[in-house]
Length: 52
Image (cartoon, rainbow, N blue to C red; front, side, top):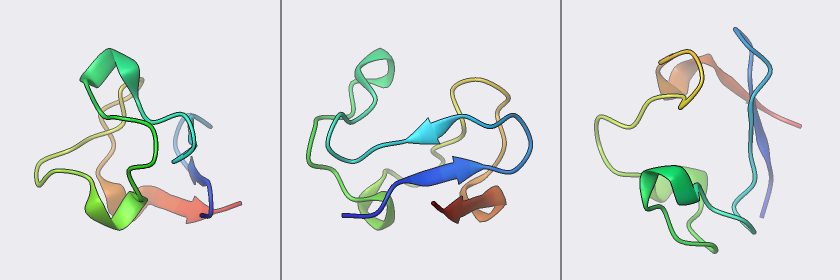
């Protein structure tokens, strides 16, 4: 699975780790994040992320 980086603040979403602070389990692919999900650092929408 690819990791995704926020183009606004640089936060990286790593599917292997998930997003524990948001109750997103490890193994959750970026395309499977819940609707309304936003960057936990700057609140950017998913369209502001790119594959790294």
